Length: 430
Image 1: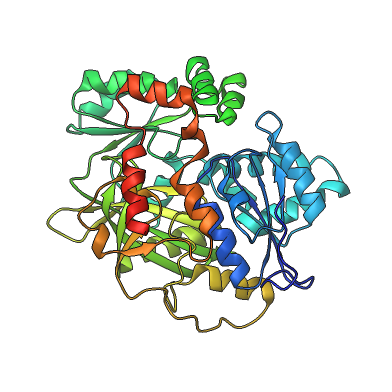
Image 2: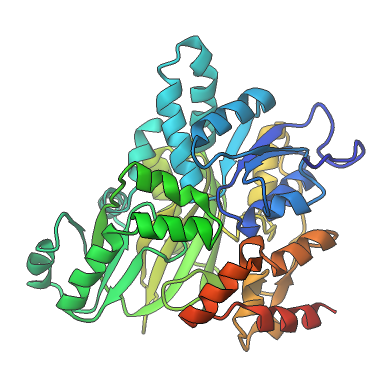
């Protein structure tokens, strides 16, 4: 475990305790830990024991192991040991685990009441848990709230695509619930291709994939949904011709406290995560955040993904991420400082005036942007963790990618292992 120096910000006994959860080794969790410590919080975490970036920071007070086989037990033990004011999940599986723990703790009598109240305070109304965990019902609620959404249909079988195709022109977008990072998104150019994508998405948690993810990617959290025979719900959406955008926001009991809207400049393919974004003033996206937050009585960090129609400004909501996103830790001034607002809420103090970390509207996420070779990289704000050299090095050499087996499979699959890109990135940092 990592110990914070007794003189560090957020290490005092009177500081609010925050518990971060992570099943993925995403950089955003470590960045959030750094930001929360700076605003006066005492940060704890529950995450995989090997290779997580949180172990490379100097700010996390204590790290607890996160079991991929018994995740609810891991969360419960960490919560009972820390007794935090709030729990912040940094990925979708962590959100689902907290939903399950809330349901389980509800049957434990008085012993579980503290846990259920903590999860409710952290995530918002439990009645909204099934909605934020899926895609179809959320978009239906957004439509009821007067927001623009693409045509969407829940697919029970591949035959449902025939009735869909009778009124909606190709191409179509198919998505699976419980997936993230673009893994469960497919774009179909033909009806036959759509049927193939439907079956492929339904099998995302199958045995062969789960074993491959566990051994090659060193991500054993894929084994549990396979063991539980999870088959993700699949939706189909009409394709919006445009460019992607998103917003992140912090909500508290249904009220949006702060938010940041961006348009995507560079990304990992058509459906993958963004690497470089441009901060924009988009009232339509922030209105969507406010209406959905109020309707579902949300608390915590959330992200909304949009497509902005070509030739106009119409923003179509396509999905929600019920967790923090790579934008969440950025302090970009009044109304755009999610970390500052959360610290203020937990400390019970007015929000301080924190100057923006940059005036540049182009933001290059670290380390994602150093792998895309974008022409915009040199003119962007380089969001490199300052004062954390060990973390900088760790993020450039992700632990799962270091195994010989991973490199062999990547080479055979024609997937770049990223070594050359990392070498270029390290030169940029020198």
